[in-house]
Length: 284
Ligand code: NAP
Image (cartoon, rainbow, N blue to C red):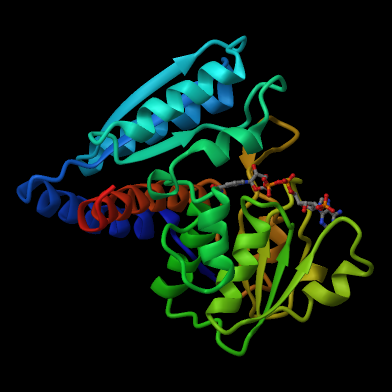
């Protein structure tokens, strides 16, 4: 089994991004990512701190807007409108989840699609759907980079995605299909999941349950990509895959930590550069 190293591949992406940022800056374009966080969810705080840290590593300026949990939706929308209109801000992201009093859909739809570095706006989702992607959803795009880096071509392969969320499962299926994979999407109502996953040449799990993917679900030699980020019984970060058992059967496997999570942030940096370039070439 080959362990796919998210650290190595994300460093490779970040090196490319750093070079692009240098070129942009030399041409007078300064990528700048505005990160909005509402409330004090500790996991969200960790994610936001990490995104800011990686921005610094690749030379991207970052701005943080930390709003209290009691923020009114209209105040959040007003901030987004201000950032949309600010030419010095080239990317905007609003850390999810938002407090229950705020409608996530309304907020995501308010971000200018050209600055939507998470690629959650329906315009960007639509571009992915029609096979003409502009900004790519970070986690699925990170998975595709991992496959590319390892020389794994999804073309003609049986690809199975477990999970159908808007953030991971659905766009993952779209990107694999765009790469000519034959894609099956499974979810909580899927009947006889094992019979489907055990046919997969490439199996992507985005369920959110520790030790969900067991060895009997994996075809010998398969590529297994673990998107899950969970806590095990000891509170330790782990993925969806029972790593110890599945490593005996898979051909390739991503670890957690050290896998897809690192790619997600690297791809966010890549999107921030793409967004800055788009605003430079197409104007506002
Ligand atoms: P989500 O919105 O909760 O979606 C989970 C999906 O799993 C749903 O589609 C659900 O089906 C499906 N599911 C649940 N139980 C199942 C079962 N028994 N059999 C088959 N499918 C089942 O979660 P998400 O946002 O996609 O995230 C999934 C995991 O990825 C989480 O652990 C999250 O923390 C992690 N994540 C990691 C990254 C990263 O950078 N590594 C980024 C984003 C998310 P239904 O649709 O039928 O409910």
